[in-house]
Length: 176
Ligand SMILES: [Fe+2]
Ligand SMILES: [Fe+2]
Image (cartoon, rainbow, N blue to C red; front, side, top):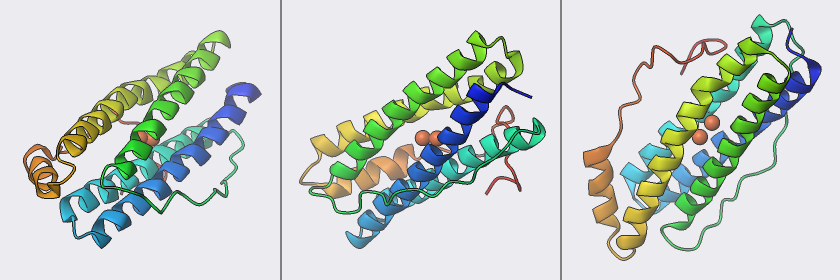
């Protein structure tokens, strides 16, 4: 079993991943309410990814026969001013999660826990992608502040295909 410091910290991370899920549902609902279906669809899909991240961590702890605490989480930010704010919130969140994932990888390495260190590698790569995606989306939104349809067209064009990453860790109960 991984050492208890790593297990505690990974349990904490499960809460951050579920919190990211809730935030992205809130973002999606906000954009749906503004009749911006591509932005809404982007965040609905992003929310599922965050839920899957949490379930990957749960599966890892199950496989390691380590204790698992399913967390309660605080309500996400749901009132936004301006078209870009939800994406700004998302970018801040992804940067914060990148630091948290790096800290988890470091904790595993410092503890000489090679399996946990390897488990965290996929998340490090994933964070590079997610920060880059949110950062690009924010740039487009800030450039098109008064032309939201430009952003919708951008997403229709660039919409990334998240289908089947064979290197992704297994998801408890199966990926959604
Ligand atoms: Fe995540
Ligand atoms: Fe993320």
